[in-house]
Length: 137
Image (tube, rainbow, N blue to C red; front, side, top):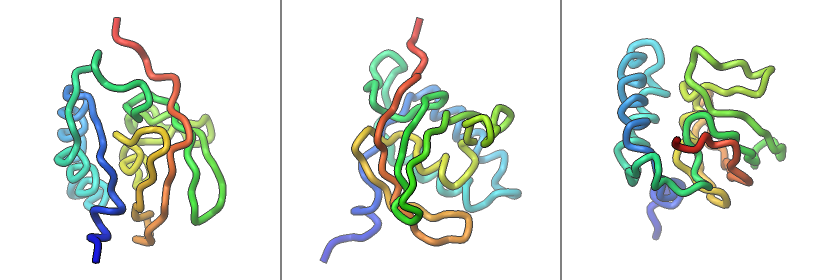
């Protein structure tokens, strides 16, 4: 028998400085958004950390544009992953402090994750393409 949670959560990668910022952000919303805060902190804790210059280019990082498929709806979406103050779903910018945003961070193109939505239902999200990641100067 396999561990379903382990099977549903593939290895992820994060930029160390970004992870520190995201951990602080998650902790700051723990009272208002306990589900997203907990999910994001769990992902940060299990991520392999990289410097900004060493992160693979196909990893979803903050400000990356990520195209992904949602198996539950059968649709694919393309959003830029942003901090809450910059979020505007109509303009294609999704907050890291949404269940989907927290589930996308750190994944690589081709990976899938089984992830809870706002209602607690598990959804399989599959990364199709990662682009638009700002390069370090």
